[in-house]
Length: 160
Image 1 (spheres, rainbow, N blue to C red):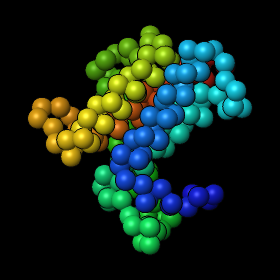
Image 2: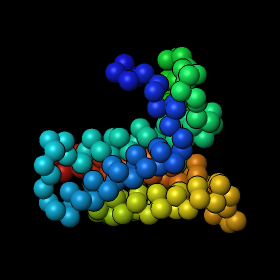
Image 3: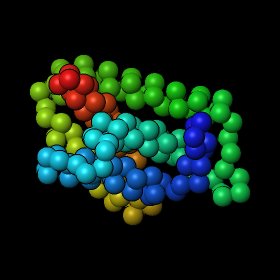
């Protein structure tokens, strides 16, 4: 927020989805090529995916803002950010319990693929104006993306 403020508030949900997609696609490209030319590796991209996922959840709640009226206070932004971080963490803990930490035996590349799959699902839901028949909605998919990015960061940090 210090550097950019809340300029992201003007982003419509599909634009946030595309931002996450760009980051996930870059991670996959680096994983497949084994090298990157831009100084940043995959860890900052996973952090970006986490942050954009939270932004998406906030936008789902508030809707996107106009270019003239996009400001919300820093206090309100932090409150919303912490609220969705807490919700995602609770989901992570619950799923971790039910799945018995299966994520620990997965490869980071699998997290990348699952994030990309979730993004394609989100794009389909967005194409259907947010309507689903039997599947989870946008919020559940953004939460899952958040959690897979957290798992990836944990695994990457364990390597170091």
